[in-house]
Length: 169
Image 1 (cartoon, rainbow, N blue to C red):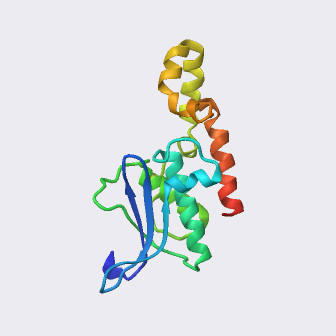
Image 2 (image 1 turned 90 degrees about the horizontal axis):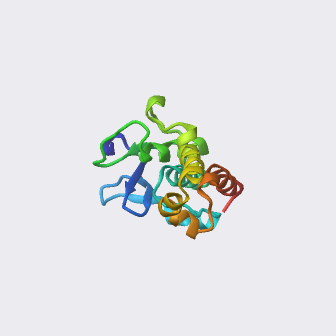
C-alpha cells in the first residue's frame, strides 16, 4: 500500500469509537490530511452508539466529505490487522466514503446492505420486543432510551443525521 504512493484511508476500531484517517505516506512517516472520530457524530445529532454499523457509515460519509473539501479524490482502504468479513463495520465506513464521492477500489460484495446500515434490523427487533416483553425491551435498549431515542425509530434517526452531515458541518 505504501509503495503505491496513494493516500490511505485508515480505519481503526476501539470498543467505543471508530477512528478514520486519510494519510499520505512519506519517508518520515504518515502525514495525516483528514481525521474523523465517530464521537464527532454527536455534533450532527447522533444519539446511538458511536461504534455500530450506522455510526461507521456516517463517519465514513463525514471523512469523505472532508476529503472532497480538501481536493482529495481517491484513496485505498487500510483496515490494518482486521480480518475482512462481508458487511463488517470497516466496509460500512468504505460505503460512506464512496457515497460521499471519494474513489476507493472495492468489490460490491463486501459492503453491508442499506437496511443494515440504517439499523432497520434493530428497529424491527425493537418493535417485536416491545410487543412481546417490555421489561426485556427496556433492559436491552436502555442506552438508546436513556438518550431519548426509541430504538424502533433508528432508521429515521439515521436518515436525519445523514442529511445533517450532507448539508454541512
